[in-house]
Amino acid sequence: MIAALTGDRKRMVADAEGGTSQRRTETVLLAVITALVVAVTARAEYDPPITTLVTNTLQFSGSDRNVTLCESQDGLYQGFRTGPKQGGYELTDISLYVRDADESRYRTINAGLYHREGYLITKVVDLTKSRLDDFAHSEWQAPENTYLEPDADYYFLLSCGGGYANGNIAQFATTYSFGEDSEAREGWSLHNYLGLRSASGTKWERDPNKTLRIRVKGRPSPHRAYKTEIISTPADGRAYHYGENIDIALTFNTDVYAPEDDSWIVIRVGDATSGPNTRVAEYLSGSDTNRLVYRYQVEFDDVDANGISVDEGGLDTGFVGSVPTIVVSSGLLPVERYFPGVADDPIHKVDGSIRGAVGMSSRRGDGGSVRTTVADDYGKRVYP
Image (cartoon, rainbow, N blue to C red; front, side, top):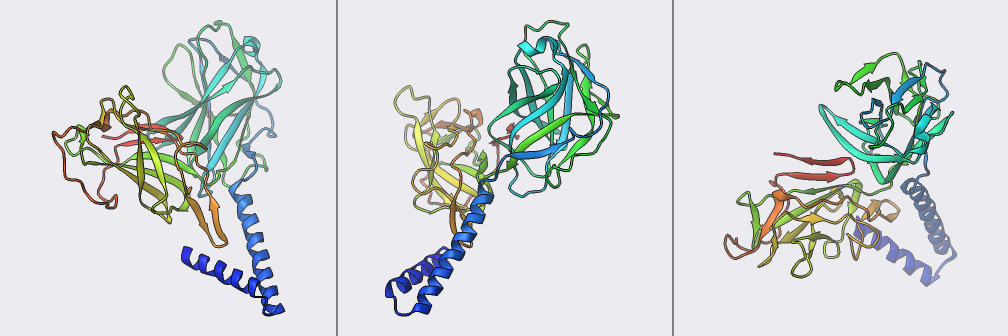
């Protein structure tokens, strides 16, 4: 496909420079204009505007739900389900309608976002609100690059820190309606109940008669990587030795193209007490799919007693040289350089001494490897 695109470009340039006929020139101009129109359309999809994803704020009012926001706080949550867009979504903020903030208007009230997959509930991220506002929508901001999977269930749960008075009661508005406002994006919905827990109890219960007045904002996710995985395992189950391969996979929300000899990421091997601990993992496989694999081969005297890590990708880290690109009919569009990092992982220690060394192997695909550690935008999970 890339070769075909390159060939088309060469023919267009040759025709334009030749100037042998007016018809040929017009054909070239028409092709260029068409390509630009398609590219602009694709760019708009690549960087979509922030908008309301789902809300019920226009539904008729229900009774208020009182919550004691203190160190031994009550619990309160509202769930929602994301839409079907294949690339997922990027969350920017969530707001609730507050009737009376009481002492909370002077406090920082945090909230947590959780993802549920079957029986597994994983914390995605903390959202922060500096204070609550009476008779207004109080907004909790999500950190940059907060990714939501398509067709998935999430829960917005209020939390707080220590130092709150026990009488610090806040009142949150609810609605008896289980409908969503028309401005919600296609496929998005709110769970038809709210969750609650008393400060003295440990069991979460559902109130099936009402939902919180809530607004979830964001946008379809820009093209990017949303998951970083260490997909290899040490041969002896304890540590990688000299000559062994460490494979890292990045999963994107779109198919991407990676130039074989000009794409790599940075991993960290060691604690940097005896010099730099950065290492280059070179592109191995996966171009034209949504999952790229990178490989680093352990060198002599590489040591990492608490496990390797991968820095979070950003404008100045991660991919250097040719950034992976989206393959589209009109040409190539860039992918955001961001990708999640992986913290020091004791499952992936390194002992590069000659003891236990293995033969230096050639490049191979990532088939047959076992996924052991996942770090992504909805939390870190460890598999046996």
